[in-house]
Image (cartoon, rainbow, N blue to C red):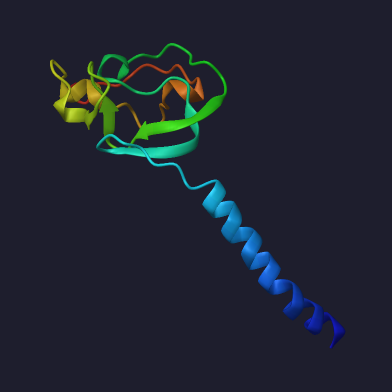
Length: 116
């Protein structure tokens, strides 16, 4: 009974503290189209130029804006659909299921889907 009473007394203070924290530290928003905020984004974001790059990426991460899933940065630093990268071949866009991006530091070769 005493625990319940203490909980009822403390609850408004907890709600006020949470509200103040949200007001003081609002969730960050990204300004560009097809971006989303990430607390731990890769230091080597995917771009049209690095889609097939198998070189290792720097370890670690940083707060910031990433392109949404299925989008990469173009030469103007805007997020575009992967298939809209100029001069790209769809056979080079889709790595084998067992390959990972550079942030995972797995350096397997890309399997071209066009091979028979």
